[in-house]
Image 1 (cartoon, one colour):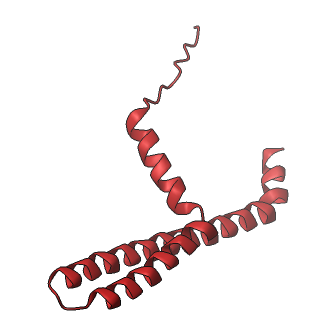
Image 2 (spheres, rainbow, N blue to C red):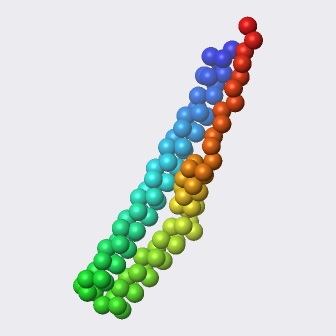
Image 3 (cartoon, rainbow, N blue to C red):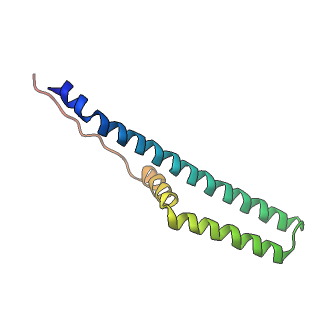
Length: 103
């Protein structure tokens, strides 16, 4: 019976597997792009501190980068979800219920 169920549900399960992999790849790409933007912001701050760029040029570039970062956060809630998960993992203890089987 279970073999027949597995055979009949294989097309559906394989589609879900494909969609899950596509979703994971897109989420990873968004996270990577957000990381790149923060690295660029750090470089921009260093350039301003070392007087390699002017204040006006810094403001224009910073606004552009922050707008892109805000757009990423609006379109994909991935960035906010990741930070929430990290905070809850550290603060909450996960308990596993024990099941005792009578012999």
